[in-house]
Amino acid sequence: MRTKDFAYWLFLAPVLIAFTLVVVMPMLLGIYYSFTSWNGITTGEFVGFQNYIDLFKDERFLDSLWFTTKFSVVSVILINFIGLSLALIVTSRIKTSSFLRTTFFMPNLIGGLILGFIWQFIFIKVFASVGEMVGMESLMGWLSTTETGFWGLVILMSWQMAGYIMVIYIAYLQGLPNELLEASEIDGASSFQRFRYIVFPLVAPAFTVSMFLTLSNTFKLYDQNLSLTGGGPYNSTEMVAMEIFKTAFMQNAFAYAQAKAVIFFLIVAIIALLQVYWNKRREVEM
Image 1 (cartoon, helix red, strand yellow):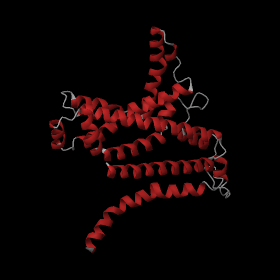
Image 2 (cartoon, one colour):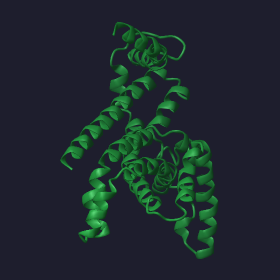
Image 3 (cartoon, rainbow, N blue to C red):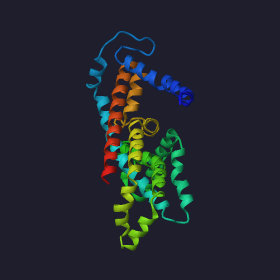
Image 4 (cartoon, one colour):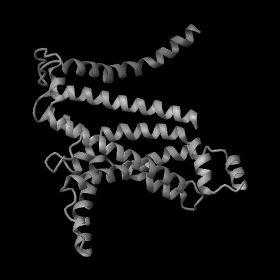
């Protein structure tokens, strides 16, 4: 038993060392720096909670946090709805199932920056051309307002992540017992009733995983925000990750940016953990 324990820790040691050096130590150093006047080169003097007090008075940071929260809520709902819908389509025994799975998953393989530039071209050039052809002014000038910029980001994120979330739902849908579905069909249950009372409760664990992934990814979004809107117009579509980056590298306020990052980390961690806890309880109730 001792030999087995030693071998276990021996193989696990490289991963633990790498995790400590790459994740744990930088995080602890970052928390320490957030209590100083660190400028990226020298630590500076200890300022206590001053950076944290200042950030709660920072309207730009609070606006970006509110915008990020709205974006995350809408995106999480849309991504999971589209992902589940696509999973139901490709598991419905249609002939083009394999082709559709590949097609739906492909956007997730494209880098965020590239996706942002692709959709920027679509929103600005393609939408404007279509608007001129059909006489719809609402299609012109996309990304030039806060509202259209918001929905542009939502569309981009949903298009990118829906295929990835689809794969998670497919894994659970394919594991459903056929006996239950066949029995419900024999008993005269409609398609909606089979989905509501059999499929939905049995794929509940997939919602826990999918919501955790979508929540964390949407809150931390940066590259798509950078390439699609750049935070414009007038920083109105600037998300928290971009606001923190600009605070650090454009204002050279590294300690202040680190304090924002710590608060942002706590917010995302608390929301994600509460979501997992709530969904786990729902799984048991179902």
